Image (cartoon, rainbow over the protein chains, first blue to last red):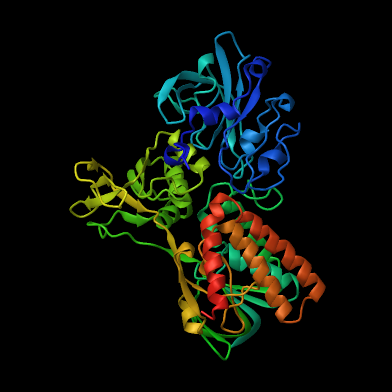
Length: 174
Length: 365
């Protein structure tokens, strides 16, 4: 049995990513979910968080999520709900050269709209810069904040975390 | 001397779930814990739980601890004795407890030991320097007391605890230099690994710590790569400037009370060390002494809560508080839940361990 690099590094391979990437045609139609959950673990809240039937019911609690991209509205509720922080929403229709990426964010401080951020890929390598477009606060204590970041369009499937650029913090410490 | 139908040692997820289940069926319970509050390890688990949506999935451990505290407080059948350690259990049914007011004897019809686990140590030069911590201690410092353990951390072990505590260190504003894993693959859930990787923390598999140095406290660590026979490869050493080395190298069941109570124990590496032989009702070979949670084999909080309910139910039945019909239906449902939680690849090791334990039972240990 071949060992996936995912299990050695925590970074999915191109073929693993291809399985969870919505088709270009769907991406061109508006915001859509990218569920980066590759390992069978006992977990199902994503299905219940979706009001639109875009994440199929689980027949076995250990299954990886089955996503129906055509039902997805890109609302981002599942991004906040996923215990593994493994769900993102990308919107490639947000601008000519830009896209929006919704990322779960549990660090402090939470940046405010307009904050410049350094974008990082799945290995934590800086890949460009962007800005905070919108912040959806999580429920008190229990919730996960979702930060929508404006990024160059070619980073829609690459940028998966961010750090606040030096001297550009304009949010509130929690 | 107080008397009770059920005494429970340990107010973590297993012990509290058992207390609530048994008390809801009319069993009088005394719950003992050395901490001053309900929840065990949950009180420092700030991450969201996996599992079923309708159970606790998506809820943070600290929130579950608060819910449990309220359930215990509101239940007239449960007395919680905090800040107290169980010292010993004797065959006439007496549990000795050291409370802040002195030693108390509790006479109980049934005993549930849900004492949890302790962290495993790792051998390397410098492991006695101040600044070498267990991951549980780091979590307690940060998440219970609001104290950072240092400024830069080397994490040893990539099981879920190592990965989660690394993430929590980042949340507290502490740098994590690297997470080391002696095995060729990451031990914990991939989602936990991905979450810290994208924050820039390297996870180095087939690596371990060679030595830790410093005059009065940790000033740095030398790490190296391991070959397929677990030997360090000369020339691969790297020096990391860190002031904390955090050990997340596994847990071992806290079975002392079980040994002392005369329960038959068996060494099962897959379950973390010596564990008590027990039946499907979680009763050990010491009559009337039950187990649930990590003390019966290292798993995690979701399985501990389910096992606790199973133990609470079985104890209530043994005291004649449950109809056979209700017992069977509930036992089947919770056992099925446990089976599903353990049925994925992540539960493989535990399944193997439990199978070995069952063989031991058949052979009469």
